[in-house]
Image (cartoon, chains in turn brown, blue):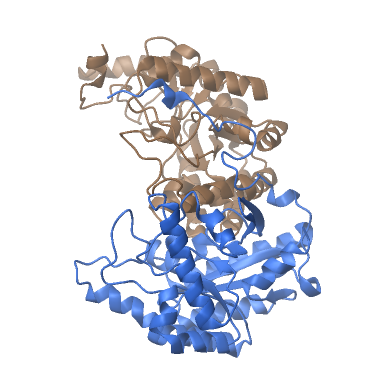
Length: 315
Length: 307
């Protein structure tokens, strides 16, 4: 079994093709058009993490104090600016949490919890990957995450973003078996979609690479003002697209990036622009997942997928 | 491939940081800092003056700005050296125009190779900060304690002797440290260092030789990072510096003094087509009430008097 799971595949095999035209209509609560959720990655990168053969945590030998301290900026300074901007625009966060942060910085957890923010799991630390783990080891991480978040916040985890986006082929099965309702690790759609899992009704929640400040700033290297521009453009198009059926826009954040003094104002302005639109549902990952199931969209999508496959003879 | 179960053991999973160097502290919950004469912003201009040896090693990593072409790399060796011959003098001239006394972080070998440059900086009323020996000698955990101690000693001795200054500030080449660096710096009478990028104020760092102050140095608005890593234009750099200043300045109304750091490189901002943008940035910042520009050691002293 392990051998089969480790074999190279040409396709993830986790979701089915369903083209955009003629999909079942998604209806969001209050007849809102576009669900907008903001997912701050509140992370802890370790000073002296162990190596994983697939990925070294730091480019330089431990301690990589420049990169370590750059991330640490988010937990000393950046998170407060990010939170203030979100408060001003009326957004709650859905926190993509390295759960060890509950132990390291309970003050940050409390500030999020006091605002009714959701916590979902982003693994234990962002410097511990699931590469080369066996399935039981990965299950232990999932249990740890559930217990840690429950003990510190009273919340039951609903969502998951794998630590540093590391995954195994069995990951979705064991997340769903543990009670996770949505995964953020796949970027194939602007609407939630069913995921193939052995048990449960896991969905893929639209997260975003393109709107993610870590991609925008560290990979694409855009200016802060351009980031605000692309957030607004992405929003304008999705808002129009959602005339026909509910859609989802996610803005994933990292307080060490967006919370820098030279970046926060243009971001604050962009999310205020979004919240100024009447058809926006300012929500969280958990609430979107619940509405998706409660409105019958999950079942309708499953049916539509089956019908599409029958019509075209595909799988 | 499999991983031992120890990969799921987290020995430093506890309250606060996962090391002993400093405690967690929320920038927005601290006792407000007041700079001399009630200033709101301490402007810390730090110009890097660097020497990239032609034979600089690639292991264990190259400091940013390192030579990239096959040996012998005429291209980048000379481009970086341009900063020491012309670029730095353009920056000195702008600072003199504004009457500013600031900090210059020098690779120690510069003091030996270009004593006239060192003299010009000192006579301009600027502070000399030790920037390691040269850009080929990075600090990392593969160095023995003795080897790193000797490197620090050699760098500080050279700069102290040639400048006549106490030289109590440190910036590692590439802002890279070993596990031992802060201890060794404190042992060599260094009061503060610029390597860590996690704050907008100075804060205290623990060492086995007493305290060391970590001074802010804005990594992401550093002229070299913006130009050579992000590939943003000069006007875009100016915009980001202004935006950064505006937010820090606004925060001082509520939270007390902040440090606005301005890291410069002689071979970046000292280029003919760039130096006017440096002037624009300084003019903008200095047009505000309550901006105190000082060499970094004075900012550290003002901070230490209040904590």
